[in-house]
Image (cartoon, rainbow, N blue to C red; front, side, top):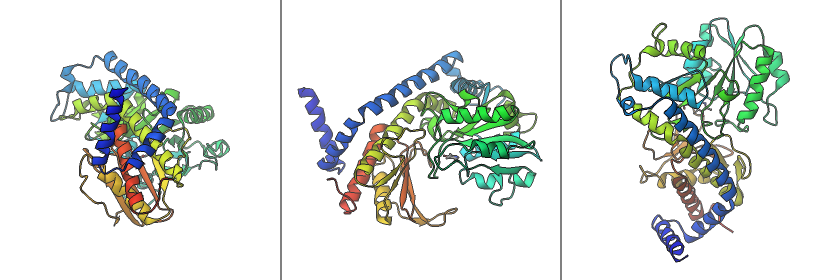
Length: 435
Ligand SMILES: *Cc1c(COP(=O)(O)O)cnc(C)c1O
């Protein structure tokens, strides 16, 4: 007992040194205590996923030699090939393409789409409007080199008002031309709920019941390891995502993945490199070790980020703000939105997140005009890997409803500090108070 008290006192002291008031520490501890059961459940998911990753690494006999990088063409890069086999094992697919040459999540999805669609084909998004950056890839927003320019047409079925799939609408829109159906798992920065893997699995089954040769691709960004199953476990032909989100575990310095059927992955590889060369070329340079180690850590890192998101929802809902998802909702991705209703709320929140960072904590973020946005945006990120959104980060457009989007945290404790720090700034600015 005495020992425990000492730790508590020391913890209070260090928070004080980090300029967090006793009031906030106690409020945060109360909320954390109430979340014990949910956090236990997250830990159980992480435990399962940790075993899944270890099993895939053992099955594929990962060895020290796989951490050597290759240069030039990268022929016989056994580290790269083994990493791809491990990803295929983890995601329960025939094959995978996991490369530092994939620049980001948008690029991974682009490679998957361009590799598997041909002129005259149609692709159909059945989860509503896709993530912003994909609009130019598809040609929803006119763009040079889009799928539309290559004669690939696009159709879309919105989700129903309750966030579920519109099965009638999907059936009506599927035609002879439909080659690929796409589903976005995470809500991204839209206001719909995120889809569960189970719901996605049902949609895959439905699409396949109409025509089983339709390729189903899932944009898996931000969803990896949140559940014990992935869309590829329930029949999706292809899943794609970014390594500077969940599966990179914070250690991957770059990269993306596509996991799926042999045919789909092969087609994607011909697009990433060249027809004929496919997966045979592509040097891993020096990143193999980080990609293996990041994947190894990804289940617990994702769990930490998830705890941070749930903690944030509970803190800010308690203080009277609208939070999406709400404090008790089931989680299917790591993104948390909080509506502050005022520019000051958004700004102070982001400054708090920045001030909690291990890197660039002394920087004070300001709202600014950014390409691709129709209002000023404020961003907070103090990351080891630039732009990494599995690391604690937040951003908010300075326009109604004045919401911030918050995600990541390589450890739960850091995510917790970020939220405490944001709350301290909001309290200091008289925007809210603990009752
Ligand atoms: C992040 C994200 C993307 C794009 O990934 P980038 O790495 O930013 O290019 C696509 N879809 C969803 C749902 C995302 O969250």
